[in-house]
Image 1 (tube, each protein chain N blue to C red):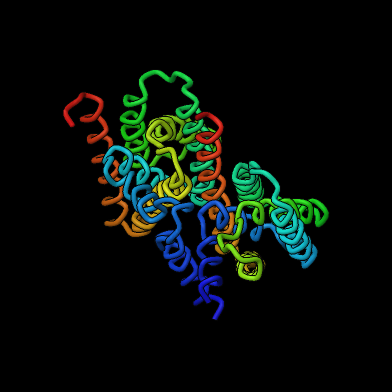
Image 2: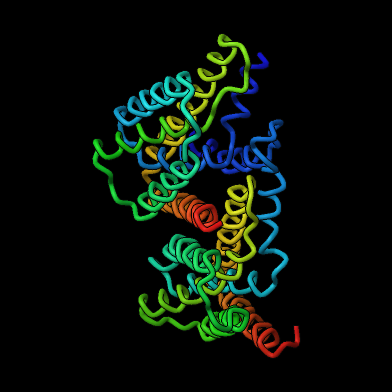
Length: 196
Length: 162
C-alpha cells in the first residue's frame, strides 16, 4: 500500500502543479510548470550534460550515484542566483559545451577519480548551467511553477542517465554506455566549435 | 461548496505547496503540526483584523529553501526548532491566503478549508517522509528536499533582485 502511495505521489504532485487555478491571483501556473519542465528539453547541450552526470554517477558508484542528483540542483540554483543578480560570468556557453565534453569523456573513459574531484568538476559545471537558466527565468506569478518544473526536469535527466548507466552491469551495456559518453563528448565539441 | 473549492484553489499555489511539503519532510512528531495549526489560526486572526500586505510570499519561499536544504542534508531538526519553523509557516500561509469571499461566514469557511488543506498536506508529506526507512526511500526524500530548495532559491533570488 505504502509503495503504491509512493509511486502515485509524484504523479499526483505533478497534477497539482499542472492543474490550472481559476483565480488571477495564482497566475499561469500550468503554463509556468510546463514551460519549466520543457525548458531543458529544448537545449540539447543541457540534456546531454545532465544525462552524462547520471551515467558518470553509475561508474563512480555509491555514494556519488545518489549524491550528484542531490547536490547538482542546489549548486545549479546558486549558479542561477548569480545569473539573476547579474554577476558577470565569462564564457557561459563555452562552459556548458565544455561540460558535455568533459563529462562525456569521463563516461567514455569510465573514469573513477576521488569523490571530491568529481564533486568539484560537476559542481563547477552546474554553476554554468544554472547561470544560463537563471538569466532566462521568467518573472511574475508563474516563476515558482517554472523553476519547480525546470529543476524537476533536470533531476529527471540525471535519473535517465543513471537508468541508462545501469546497463554497464553487462559487458555489452558497458560498451554502449561508454560509447554514449564518447558521443556526448563529440556533440559537446561540435557545440564548442559552433557547428551546432 | 463554492467557498470550499475556492479555498482549495487559493491554497494550491506552488509557493504554498513547496513550503508545506518541505516542512513535512522535516516533521517527526505531532508538536510541529500543532504549532503549524496555531500559526494558521494566528495568521487568520491577523487577516480578520485587516492587517496590511505582508512579505508572506518571500517568507514562504525562504522556509521552502531552508527546510528543503535541511531535508537534502538529512540533518535531524530539534523539535523546538521544527515547531518554530512550523508556526512561522502557518502564519505566513494564512496571511498569503486571504479569503476571496465578501461575506464573513463565507470568508471564515474559506479560511477553515484552506487551513484543513494545508494541515492535510503537511501531515501527508510528514507521513510519507516518516515511512521512508529504506535507504533508497531516504535518498528520495533528500532528492525531494534538494529539488524544493533549488526551486525556492531561484525564485527567492528573482523576487529580491527585481
